[in-house]
Length: 183
Image 1 (tube, one colour):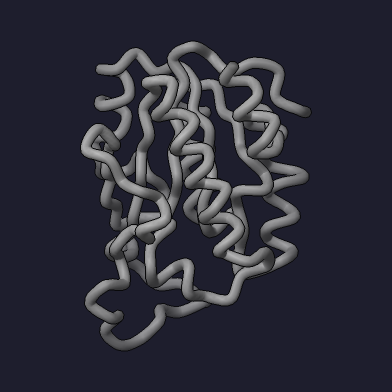
Image 2: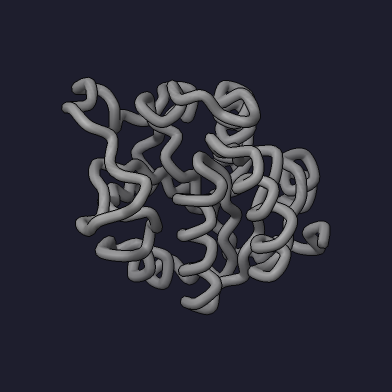
């Protein structure tokens, strides 16, 4: 369902737009996702609304059938891409799990600011973005996903999140439409 309104207390949450993740092969070009995320961030900042930049530095413990990537990542792997133009007022959330809420102070920071709605973008659609959007929904936030500001490494996983999961969690729309709703 297209987005109908953005609460006056909305915040933008950009997931894992960092050097190591944006360098991976994705369904939609990562540089386009980053550019749209940067446009959203600039629009939210211009209206005095919170921008949350999330990066990941590790993974949850436990066995998976998919296994874990081996080796030590490059030193700058978790650094946010410079195109996001991180500002002093932005919230930085560093996570070690898929979702931005588990084991972080994100919910407390958002509640302290009176945030009621979250707009999501980032990589990967079916992992960090979906996990964070699900948790936001469970925490009682209105959820909106900028569907042209997300991408994944797997086309089917991306499609499933965009077509089946996100509409059940909230609303979806394009970057341009969401910027338009900011007024």
